[in-house]
Length: 92
Image (cartoon, rainbow, N blue to C red; front, side, top):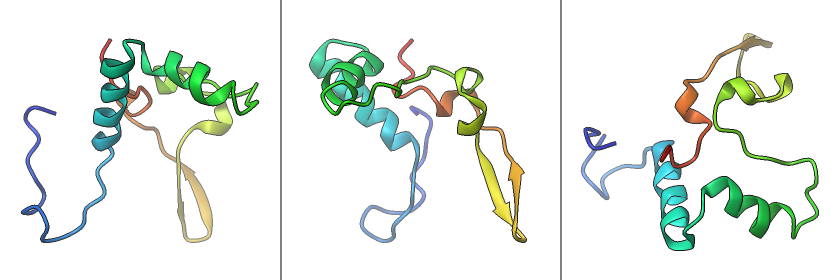
């Protein structure tokens, strides 16, 4: 993210930006002193009773039904995601 440039001047327009989630996850890691996946498991998933929910480091580890797709012309088309989209803070 060091080389990322702003899409517009702050406050002038709204843009969705996936890497913001990487920054938020990294903050959780720094503050908690634990990997993001571990923090999610113990502080979010388990307390909520989410026994079949887990984090993955790469899209290679995702179950088939969790892979990406694009909906167009009334149909679904498989769409792979870059491996770094799956891991939260990419701090490995």
